[in-house]
Length: 262
Ligand code: KIV
Ligand code: NA
Image (cartoon, rainbow, N blue to C red; front, side, top):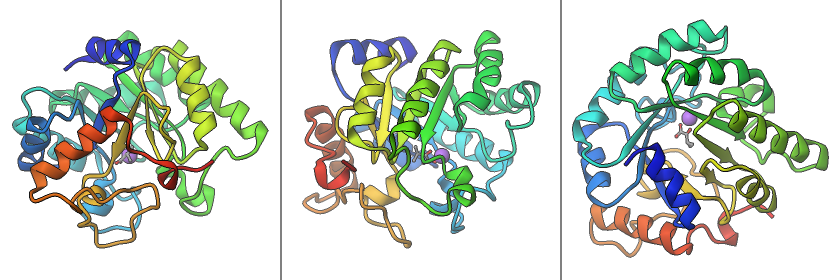
């Protein structure tokens, strides 16, 4: 899998299945089950480290888990989150840290934010590092938002998000994650830009879907958000649960309205 092939999936209307991954064993299993993209998410601050947010995750943590995942993968495209504090200062800081994640095995890095990230996205992409954007609920800003809540509900915020998405794509971003935004807005964004839009709690009309592995296996100790489906229900193995997830994304039977915000 590579960026060009992901782009072609969007053009053909085939949905892209994305799952988070933090270690070689699950990475190999997800890879075998047909997951297109493995995201080494800073959600590992919660799923692996037991924190209540992604804020304490370090660059070293992300390098380590990226190396682990890369060992397990043969097909899937690997995207790694840039952790809080590792890219917000300036494009140079972002490049220096993104380069370490690429050396660890990432094929693309993900940064949170719209307008404020444009220079950084351009700087990285022009120097050979593919970048994924992340808009809507950006968990590194949880304290600014006052909790994990649906974003861009009013018209002005929706318009701003659409503008940010277009600007990120124009700056060279190769993919975009939309988290916890209304279904209609996510659909509009997916239509407005050429790069694949991957939704989580963003309705069924995105170009692909992403879930946190521990959420979709029903093994996260904390509270899972409402947009999650437990794919272990009805499955007899973890591998089956993951291939059921891939199949549901491709068939557009997940997410349903119960996992979305109208
Ligand atoms: O860290 C993560 O797992 C993510 C996804 C939820 C998109 O950023
Ligand atoms: Na993340």
